Image 1 (cartoon, rainbow, N blue to C red):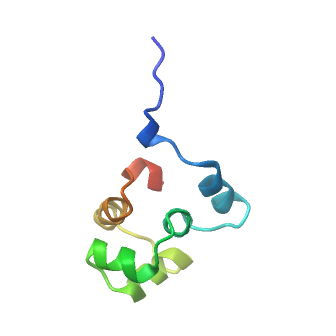
Image 2: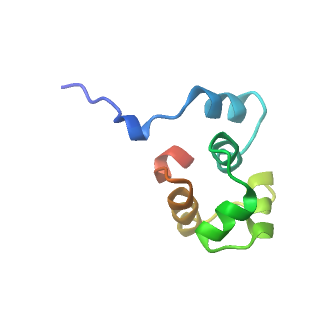
Length: 82
């Protein structure tokens, strides 16, 4: 039996391109794709904008709990973040 990804689990080509071509972190690629500011996402995730900036730049690796919060703030699944 074949399993197909549900539409909400897909990753848009633009996001994949930003991650591969521009070497963006998934958090930044998704945020920019969705047209959100760092301040918007940080507030939704309950973190500081500075902490989000460090995650997006790759200077700090997000813990699993933080990835869960970021995914929820972006309206995507954790699997789409990784």
